[in-house]
Length: 324
Image (cartoon, rainbow, N blue to C red; front, side, top):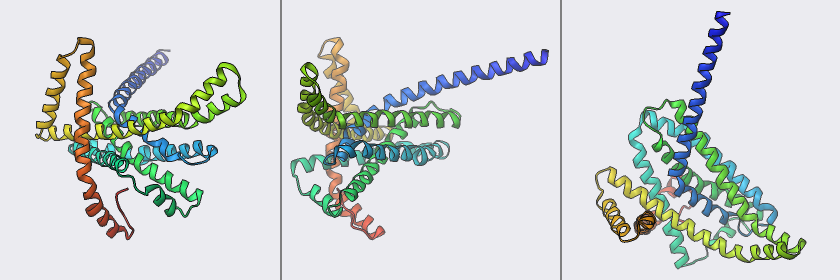
């Protein structure tokens, strides 16, 4: 009997440790997810463009394909790489964050440049697919998964950087896996709702009467503007997040002049408004100047990508490579 009681006591102790570990994983995962919020907003805002122009019955399947690719990116590729970095090269986390931030600046600035000086990029995409909807869908999904890889790398690296030091590797793995699954479900669940909202509104307008019918018509009317706004938000998030990551990384490397100056401007602005608004103003000023830095860096990288990186990739792969 004494042996049985001792065994039950051990089991109870293990259960308490497991429960505590689950709480720790949940807490660290939530903190990491909040830290990565900027990249998450960017991911959610950018993805809907990849289903634009397809038949309504293909929208959700395309989103699901991209979501599966995103999970593969995070769990199969990025999580093991993040754990290896944590064990063997923790010093590389900040430079990799900066590299990813620079890429976000480049992507955002390129979108801004295309908006100012539109070309025939959509026509190029259609020509490369041969006009075949199936090939175009495959090309769009591949492009979305490639972009997701960069954003997912940012999310996973930010999450890794928020985990307290000296955590066991299994704890880091659980936190990163929880962040990967949670963020992917949240982002692509939201994207699926966004891309189907107009179809739902149209259904309400056609099949219901009264208030529901009017609500459906209103949804259909506002969705084009909402999608355009979402594109703008996604581009702004790219520039803001990318600029912040690069400036913060430079500060960690001892080149914090611009980072400190922006912080000073934000503090000065926050002191000029009532207390309840101070935090909002501080964030807004910081995000604005981070975004300006992101635009400047991104525009500088466009010719580098077009005339240096693109040709180098083309020389290695034997394929035409250029900034898109």
